[in-house]
Length: 404
Image 1 (cartoon, rainbow, N blue to C red):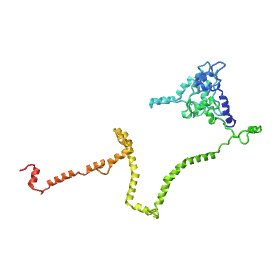
Image 2 (cartoon, rainbow, N blue to C red):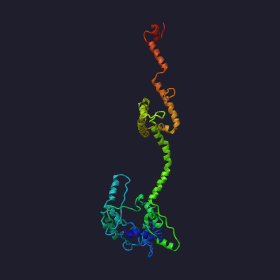
Image 3 (spheres, rainbow, N blue to C red):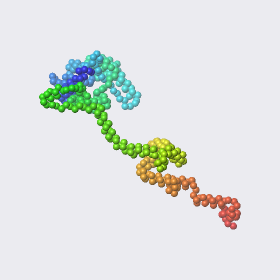
Image 4 (cartoon, rainbow, N blue to C red):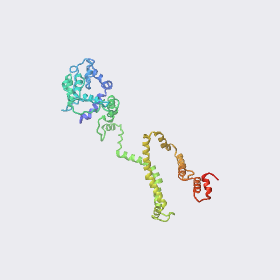
């Protein structure tokens, strides 16, 4: 919409809907079925002269003495221009079990045969275009059913109790709640403050009321001009710079300056007086110890994270697949539960290079290196069995076990 309709529509709506007798104590506090029955009861003083509802209104009208077509006149919502009036309708079926019987039931419900059964009962409009209009019990429903079919193929509930909650269709939430708040108090509701008020043109020049007050000797203070967007942005940048300044000073003094000084100092000799050029770097990269250290660092930086990540993924799978997963988790996560100091001491005791201190090296040496007593025993055995050593009879007597 445009022109005066767009400019004045919300104002007229606030003026009329703001009356408590119209909405706040009337339609807003009345449920759908009651709003229909109250329109057709009360004799000459019904509570409403018109009701806007769905196809179930015929059922509610049947609860009164009014008759559809005679006492209750029904007409579609007014159309815009030469287009057809918007009449919406839809059927929904949810299958909770994937079976052939459920599929057959859904297929039947979507057929014209099922829709015609409902249409004959009255109080129901089918969105099925294949339903014969003559199926409906009265002329009113026939006309509305024709408008439903002519309104189009697709329809979307923009604001209805059937719309999803995210789109404001749930009562008491979202857009539906904003509409209720607007109807309760159109002048102060959040919906009104967010944009239902029409935009007024900004005034420029001298206010006539202010000029008259000034001429009468009662000057008024002119309203302060709003801050420009540029000034607000500049203020925010200044505040941000003030907050960042201490951190930048500390970063420069403790990180940037030491790094720069170290780079400059690397081009001088040990005393710091003589310029050495790239001699220090040449000595650095030709030293065997430095190259070994660099190689170890590369291994640590490249291979250690790769191995740790791979093992971590394997352990993660094992904790969920193996039967003894609880015990496996206990072994894996135990180092994380121990403090760093205690873990360091334990690792030192396990992996110490000295076999007399490190448990791992002690086990390795014990399994791979024979002890001194075992070496002496082996030498005695070889000496006793070597031919030509000592007297033959004594050796024979030792082996045989009998002395003559």
